[in-house]
Image (cartoon, rainbow, N blue to C red; front, top):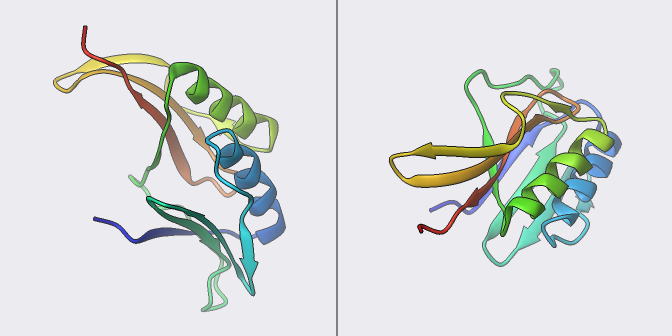
Length: 127
């Protein structure tokens, strides 16, 4: 459905360091800098950050969350810990299991150094 997701940053170097660490826990190679943007490419899509080209500060989307697929609860925890260790802040409930209509999910929420809301999500097997 998506070719890529791009979010704004006010500090490209800080964002690259943060996302290299966070996405590295998911096996994603370090991002490639292209002028005012950084791209992390995988076989399933592209995530990127950019300094806004209109010269205005990057702002956070109220109600916006970017979710990253994790392969286990342990990987989601490592993703979250890497984010906090590299300037992110935890938000919502602590990482853990949430149950809903679609079964059990292991969710870990944080905000990146620019305040963008992120989620590490592991879809737990049905038992």
